[in-house]
Image (cartoon, rainbow, N blue to C red; front, side):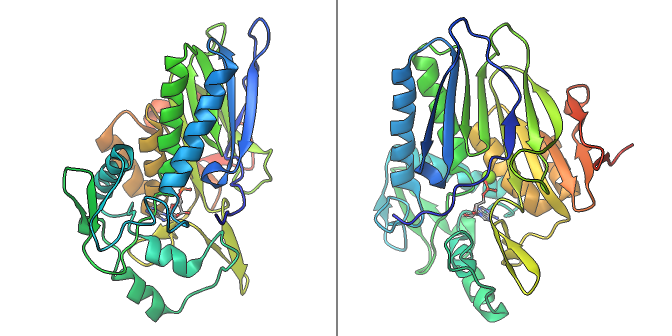
Length: 335
Ligand code: AMP
Ligand code: MG
């Protein structure tokens, strides 16, 4: 299977371990095109981490878009029966399409293939090519028959679950760890992070959100988190290429077929569900700050941190009191 470079970590853990005999931490590189780290602070066993890694390989094999032999790659004009898990994820992704008015659209793949970002074959397609590919993009044309059968309405349509697969896998990882008796853990799937339980000692988890302009180790703010929380960042800096002095990144606006240009460098979503946070981080990046905050308010139970191209930082009201700006090159938009 062809792989793209691992995504850089978008969020860094600032929490140190304080378990009696230290945390158990393991890393795997490869599944879902990224580097994943599972760290258990309390409960469970190393076997639980091995089970999580097996699950990641399985999700990767079924849901990767670049492999035509995967369940996902096989979905097209002819009806295909897929596993219940894959079916349910597609169903949820269609609902995210509806919730976001099409800013989130897993039928975007004909367009992402044209741009080729992360494949080594990047290029700036002609407007006509983009328009032609956009004719195959519409989440409403995914036909789900209620019996695990998936069919795409037109020949040439293709699915891409890249914007939700990691969040979905993080939720599954949390389920596996919980069932194995883990009480406290961090599941980091390439910056798509789930904090399970509470930190040993009961203090809140604390994360630093990556400075979208800095290298892997710079963060511009910290946020304190309660138990069982997902934190997901989508940013223009994660995967991109440059041509003629212009940067082209991997998050496509389905309205234009081009990299989303909504005035944002990154969006971080904090919520209870990894899959939802993942879908929303991508969608909010496309929507831009104003439409995105309206969406989050409507949905409820999710918070967001928006960084504009001018280094202005906007947070949703629920983060007041737990958010702290730590880099003075950035400024709060509302201050
Ligand atoms: P993320 O890093 O979670 O924001 O997801 C970005 C990935 O999702 C891209 O690499 C594409 O594979 C896919 N993608 C790009 N634009 C969209 C979109 N508007 N809706 C759904 N998936 C997208
Ligand atoms: Mg996403």
